[in-house]
Image (cartoon, rainbow, N blue to C red; front, side, top):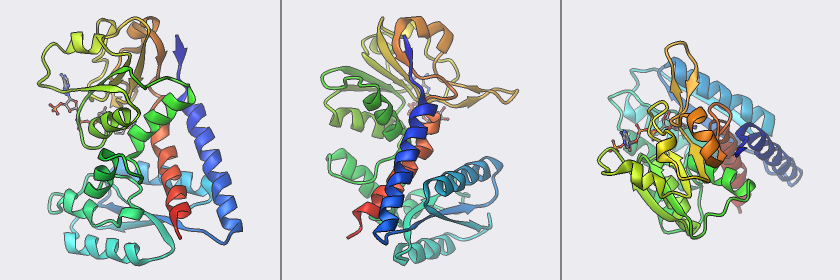
Length: 280
Ligand code: NDP
């Protein structure tokens, strides 16, 4: 069994982005990521700070705009519109969740396609589904990067994704399909989940339930990818996979923390560099 080291790979990705940004700078190209936070949810504030820190490391400018929790959707849309038109902005990210008076789908779709560095808008998802180029959702893109850098074959393999959310499960399934995996998407209505998971050469857990995937879900020698981040009462992080139970049965496995988690911000940085490189 080999542990997939997301900390190491994410550091490599960020170093590569840093080098790309330096190269672009020498060609006179620079730009900033605009992060918009509505309200002051403490967890969101931590994510926003981490993104700013990663931008600083990679040589990407960072503008954080904070709107009051009582702001209107129109105010948020006006800010997005200004960033859409601003040539110095290479990426726009609206930190979710939004307060109830705002329609997330409407807001995300207002972000210009070439600046949608979270890859959440309908157009970005559509581009992924038809296999055309574009900015990809960061967490599943991070999983793909881990598989690629560990030379794990996807082509022809049985891939099972447990979870069908718009931000993880569905784009994950599409990315695996685009790489010629034979993909099954399982969810809370799936019958015979254990049997289906046991067919997987590559099993991706994005369920949001601590230690949900135990050894009896895993085929001998499978690659097990754990997207889950679940916080215990004492503040520790737990994955969706029971790592200790599963590890001896897997050929490769991601730990939590230090697996998929650190890849999300690294792929966000990658998307920002790609957005700048795509500029005419
Ligand atoms: P959601 O809650 O949106 O989706 C969970 C999915 O799991 C749903 O599709 C649900 O099915 C399915 N599910 C729930 N219970 C079961 C069950 N008993 N059997 C089979 N399927 C089930 O979560 P997210 O996709 O947003 O996140 C998943 C996990 O990944 C979370 O732990 C989250 O914290 C983590 N995460 C990690 C990120 C990172 O950076 N590494 C980024 C984003 C998320 P149904 O659709 O039928 O309800």
